[in-house]
Amino acid sequence: MIELLDLHADMLRDEFETFDSMDQQQKIDSLKEIYDKAVDKDNAEKTIYMEKLNKEMHGKVMNEYKSYDLMDNEKYQRIEYLL
Image 1 (cartoon, one colour):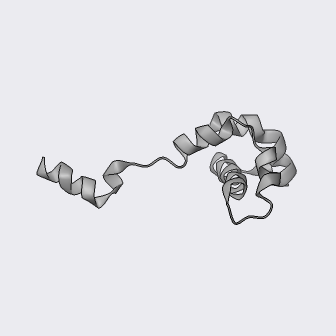
Image 2 (cartoon, helix red, strand yellow):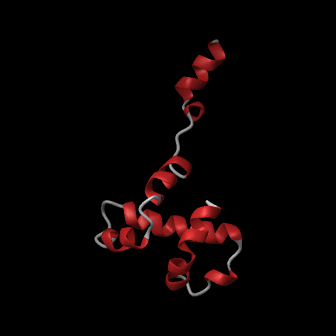
């Protein structure tokens, strides 16, 4: 995520006036906020936000931010228990 922050720092400064005074987690949260707006199918302005993001970001964020841990699913926890 740090790499993505560096890549989008200028855009985030334009979007958030307090970006430079934010701590690391707040900066990550601000990038996630822009990303969420860009991929929200119900957001009429999603195209505007998608254009602000680096094209490679979508795949990277999908891997890091939207990843799915099978062990969070109760069914897989029961299977693990039975094994």
